[in-house]
Length: 404
Ligand SMILES: Cc1cc2nc3c(=O)[nH]c(=O)nc-3n(C[C@H](O)[C@H](O)[C@H](O)COP(=O)(O)OP(=O)(O)OC[C@H]3O[C@@H](n4cnc5c(N)ncnc54)[C@H](O)[C@@H]3O)c2cc1C
Image 1 (spheres, rainbow, N blue to C red):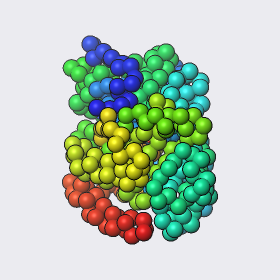
Image 2 (image 1 turned 60 degrees about the vertical axis):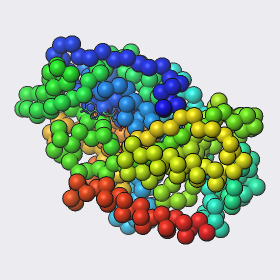
Image 3 (image 1 turned 90 degrees about the horizontal axis):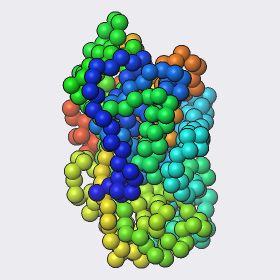
Image 4 (image 1 turned 135 degrees about the horizontal axis):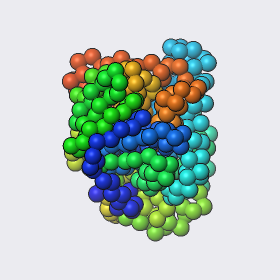
C-alpha cells in the first residue's frame, strides 16, 4: 500500500461521455502533464488531460524530494560533450525547476505538506567523504544518526513534499483555470493534417496539438517516435510506523538524504515521525526481493530502529535515456513530449511541462539546448531490461568497493 495514496484525498475523474474538441490534448496526469495543462489553461487554451487517475504513474509514487536533478550525465562530461555554457545553463535550469514548484505551490495555494530543507549526500567511507562539507558531528545535527557516516555534502536547495497532494492541488488548479480531466486510457492516436484524433474510453477527441507526458510509462505502441527512447527502471520505497524519539527531533532540523552510491538509497523523515526509505536497482514492479534488500540496508544504516515496523511499501518506474539527460520538445509536427528525468522528476518534470506549454503557445522558453534534441533510441530496445541487469551487476561491486 502506498502511504501517499493513504494520506491524500482520492480525486475521482469522470470518463469521457461524448466526443471532445480541444486545442491541446495531454496524455498523462503527472507533474509534467498537469504543469503543462495549467500553463495552457491559464493562457486560455482549451485543454483536455487523459489518464487512469491523477498521479497513477510515478508522480503519485515518488519519494517527494523536490530537488535539483533530472540527469545522470556528470558535469565534466556535460561540459566536454556540449560546452561550458550548456553545462551552466543546465545547472541553472535545475535550480529554477525547484523554485518553479515552490512558486506554483504558493500561487495556487496548494498545501503539499512541505517539510525539510535541502539535500544531504551521505558519505560512509573516507573516499566518499572527500566531497563533504559537513563533518560526521555536524551531520548529527540533522537528526541523522546513520551508522558509519563519515560526513555529508549538504546542498541547501530543495525541499520535501507530499507527492499526491501536489498532484491533487495541480488537478484542482487546472480545473479552476478551465482545463478538463478525464479518467481514460488513450487507446489510439491518429495524426492528421487538420487535427490529431485520439480514441479514449469509447470517445473520440480532436486536438490541434498533442502532448505526451508519460515518462517511464510511455505508450510506445501508440506513438512510434517514442519507441525505445527511455529505459524504465524500478525504484522501491517503504515507510515505517511513526518513530517517537525521531518525532521530537525532526521539527528542529531535517533534510532529505541519499547515499553516495551509483545504485543509490534515499531517505527522509516525514512530518508525522515516520521514515521513508527508498532505493533503485529493481528490474520489475512486482518484485518482493527489492523490499527485503531495502529493509536490510535500512537496518544497517539505522540499527537503533531495527524493531520499527514497515507499514507501507510500493514501487514505480523511473525513465533513463541513452545520453543521461531529459528531452523537452517536439516529436513530430504538433506532437510534443518531455521525458527522461532519471528519478528526479518532481522539479524537472514540473518545469519541463511548463516549458512545453510555452513552446506550444509560441513563447520563448529557456530550455538548455541539449535537452531539445530527441535522445537516440536504445539499440535492440526489447533487451532494455537485460542492459539494466548488466549495468547493476557492474555497478553493485563498484559501490561495495567505494563503501570500504
Ligand atoms: C519510487 C519512485 C520514487 C521517486 N522519487 C522521486 C523523488 O523523490 N524526487 C523526484 O524528483 N523524483 C522522484 N521520482 C521520479 C518522479 O516520480 C518522476 O520523474 C515523475 O513523476 C515523472 O512525472 P511525469 O508526469 O512525467 O510522469 P508520470 O507521473 O509517470 O505520469 C505518466 C502518466 O502517463 C499515463 N499514461 C501512460 N500511457 C497512457 C495512456 N495510453 N493513456 C492515458 N494515460 C497514460 C500513466 O498512467 C501515468 O500516470 C521517483 C519515481 C519513483 C518511481
